[in-house]
Image (cartoon, rainbow over all chains, first blue to last red; front, top):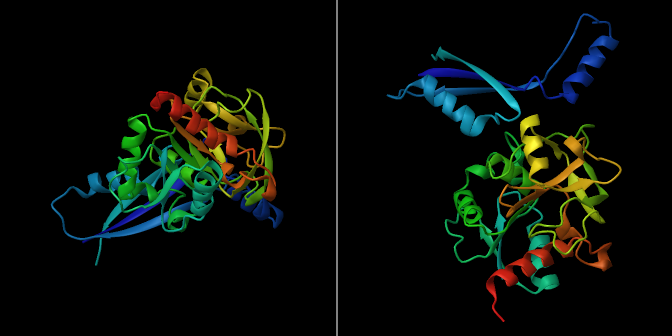
Length: 82
Length: 227
């Protein structure tokens, strides 16, 4: 069994008004060193034993359903699940 | 002319769409549940607004995985008129039937009011009842209607006259180039954020949206009925 951790964020070229607002409040309460803040999504998949290549199927799932590549970037990590 | 109104779990403008076709236009219309696998008996497809699958993951993402979407793609490829309004527009972009995507509104607020739309292109099967440049009043109700596409796609949309409606004056959601509605390259798939089906009777505040549905029927009759 594997645990797959997927991180999704809006692409760099796209404004993240939610992230900018949160960054604004961090600045306001004294964390001026914060340069940028982007809010994204975190997905965790548990994948059972399979003959298929995990890397390939996770990439497929990300591009078909889990993310919209027009507006989002993603990366993932695959770990052994207990 | 016979229309299909596609219904997903969470669709909530399906009844308005049905009413517009049946009672205001007097054409045939049927609800089609998202698990269905055949649209061949219909001449036009309407994807209504709402919150299909509760907007889980992304607006339209889950709806795009439904059985019926393969049929909607077939209908679009066959040149049948396909109209997606609001959540319907989001589903059409997720399905790749229209380019770009709809982001959260610039001010992060759900906007619900009547806006002015400019008809940028009246030379489509959806807009032949309007004048070019005509300003019409149509309600909006969305939280994610901020149209986005990359520069290359925008240049294509402009070169092919695919931008059909823009917000006139005030842009409620921050969309690129004030875009409110676009068609595909072939011109038979229209996605728009404003709700023409909510503006089909003067009794409830205006009938500017009715002309859009009349346009579809007019074009269809010209193509299919020999007098």
